[in-house]
Image 1: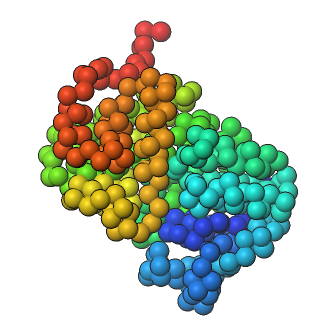
Image 2: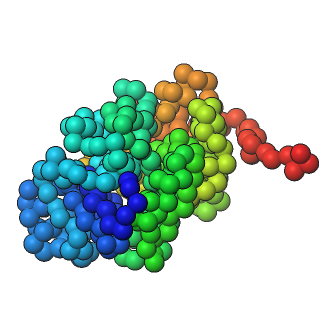
Image 3: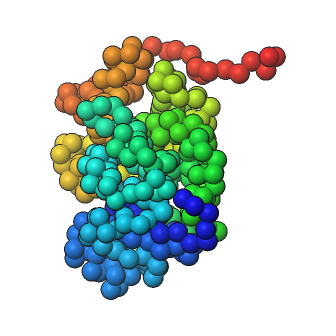
Length: 343
């Protein structure tokens, strides 16, 4: 993005998060094209200033123009924000590649992993849009709470400090804070991994476990995330920030979290198919659970919680058997990474 007072921005994805991000940008005085697949929803947003499917009752700024035409939505844009599910990133990027210039900045908001390649969303975008500057935003960002004006913070991650500053200008509001981090890989990986443990948290909550048990689950989840990410090259300290413990906490405790709701349905006796149908939106943690468990086995990384969830989701093991396996797992170090204060 060039330095200027007003940008033309495209937000791809008319779900709850895409809608609130588009609105934040529009409220800061920028023109926003919001790409939505459903023609009927496009007409409703433009006429009534409301996305009644995903965010009923939330007023959409006049600077947001919804469209079902993907290519026209990104034409001449300074910035494109990907808010579609991670499984749609590659195909969407391929479709728009010829319509973006070298000056177009790309922001990924997805929290998933590509099945065939184990690439994170920004890495998929880098392959398909190599001429563009690409960064990510991630953090404890439940869309409904942002829409309700609750104080929220996120992280923009990029090695480019100018890019980070421009994203801050696009998104910052009185209720929405944007911090920076240079560990793009770690920030994005944290966002994907925490979805696994949100499902575990939903299961344990439905089973009525106590606060002691919930605290064990939360802290051991963070230990697993950190252990896995370190082996793949991320900075362990990243996981102490908003994209790590911050996002993990909110998705493991809030009934507004799709992955938590999947776990809650499973804990209440629903099958995986029934749980997915009940939630009604993409829950990235299901696919991520499968991919991460297989990758952990391949690399020899100890992840008892992720392994137990995999057994429940894909091997039809009874939930209580999986929980018993977690409790009988090896009692390893409390903290894997220590700072030597004498150095």
